[in-house]
Length: 563
Image 1 (cartoon, rainbow, N blue to C red):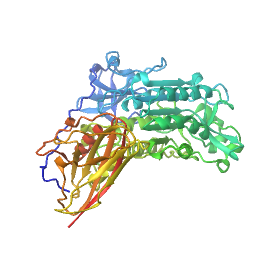
Image 2: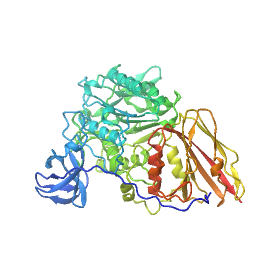
Image 3: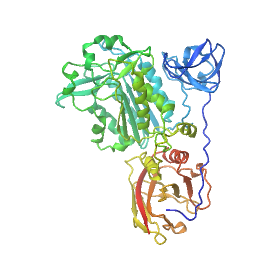
Image 4: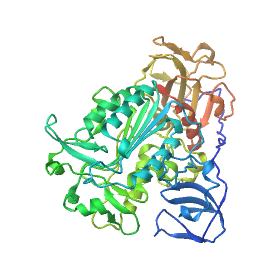
């Protein structure tokens, strides 16, 4: 559908504020490397006294800007005292690299309605359970993920080692639910051992997370975790849960040395330790194990699957590893990809959790490519794979050039991605007067009904498969509030929209938000009452970032235009 009151207008680039660190001095000559590996390619030599700009500090390495190049150096080779004040720190005295910057991610104000719980278990009360020294770095990595998701530092709670007992975890989850309001967002990160225990009620062995104290009270099965998480999910617009643990011992049950001393992997210096602790011989055999899926357990309690994102570090028959120097492999690679390395593969204007997973999987394969004994695990997503954890800057999106074989994203697909960010527990219904319109004759007519008071926004992907419009509110009609249960009829008489072709299908997205959106943040020429943006990567990024930052309900419907 082309709107005759509109003229084509390109969206100007948004001004993206990016955090800047002051330059620091190189204390001793070192190499600028392409990756956080001692065997990575050397990009250039950095002499003593050279000046570089720190961009991120991760696991003993610093990502820096050195002239026109970016790369990695040992954090210990830099005079970092002047840089740490500008970066966020994590609450652990054991960490020497507790700073964070998320260049490439939009500089958005932390949201008070977002929360995180970071659980890391590196030491266990039972001395027979192998330690996981890399979890101290996972605290830092999970903090960086949380901050990139606009979670304020004061809303991030930590449970580590002796504080991460079974009862401590249960208590923290209950307290988090009490702190939340409806529509809040939650990120929960667990890094530690997985295990398998016998459950008579389940008729076999079940997969569990192993807390610091172990035993009956220190083992949390998937079913119990689902019980604990369900109240949070009923409130949250999205709950993102990441497990960096595994539930398969495999060959490791016969080699206790790998569990305790670690495994030296070719191409890196950090010893790898499996994130699995066997509870019994019976439960170490995969054939005896019941499902590990958290999502079915949660959705069985009435939670829409669209509102849950569960990222796990391995399949049920695979091994996840802890790197003593850089942390869990899954955690560090998800962090790297979320902060900067993941690409907008479909040109949608956003990087989804599945695109982050693909990026992290490639890094995991590369990390273990020279390892002959073990294969890389498979990162798995359950629930909403289209979830966008953070919105990236236009600069980074442009840098992530699409392959020439990539099919251009349609306007309908762009609206679908916005729709995937909705809170599915919010009921929004649309009733069209007719779904087929004769070109030049019929007018668009529909009504919107919501189960809560809010602000209505209507976007349309035209039948020309190129244009994206914000139909409502507009210059002629800004009264976009809707009352619970009362249909809102649109368009109103002041801005009726007649079918004007070309023949084809229009996709319309209706959002109902708690708070109004400032459409003036969408820089576009207005020759009529509506906003029209080019259906390009930058335009979609601007539209998506504006519409989805706060909780909303949504509905989509189609209108066909015919001759």
